[in-house]
Length: 287
Image 1 (spheres, rainbow, N blue to C red):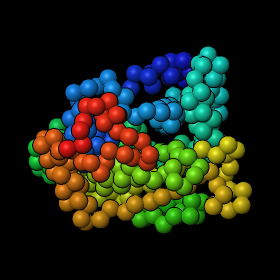
Image 2: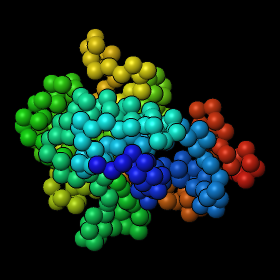
Image 3: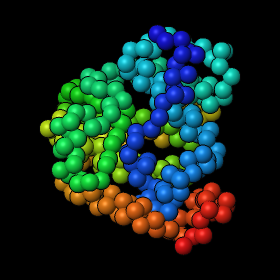
Image 4: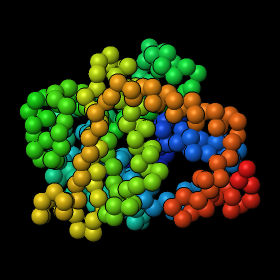
């Protein structure tokens, strides 16, 4: 197993997924903002990065877990690292792995899978989206047997799509319902549609769906004290639909046009009570 400091330092060096949905969500809502982000890369557009940092650390620990670098029964010491977000991520991770083994969702096919996977896959994506570049990074790909499907359906209270290939997306969220809404849900929705079809192009077979494995950041984490409504574990499932590829293509064409034409969207200047940093710094006049 990697030492905690090595894991932590590796996380600090990791980046995003290139032209994934987190990238395209910005120009979909405001083309001017994406242009300004490229022109002013040192401007912090996030603000309070605490939740973001916790999520990054949690995702990387999960990646190490599914890759076998962190064993199920090996404790991770937090003492060498003075970082509250790291400590919170370790707390969440320890709770999750103590309840769900690495093969909980079925046979692991791929971990932190970067797309496009091969030149042939890249060509298939170009045939789909034309000149618009789209990439992705999938947390976990599993092959679920009939027994796996039945177990997860009964345990998580969801109805899956039968045996086959599934995408699993790890998420952490605030305990309040309103902390799970807004732009994050918009991005997750488009990411879901994109990743399911993009992966099907690589595997040349249908993807059965995408499972969102959500861990709520309760002060006292709990499995199912009084039924699933009180659990820190929440599960959501999305089935692929025939119209998904067309929806994704339309969304990316819109976002690309907004960005190329440098269009400002005055409706997007305030998001959940926060003023856009480019407006507050006088770098954008809202038109």
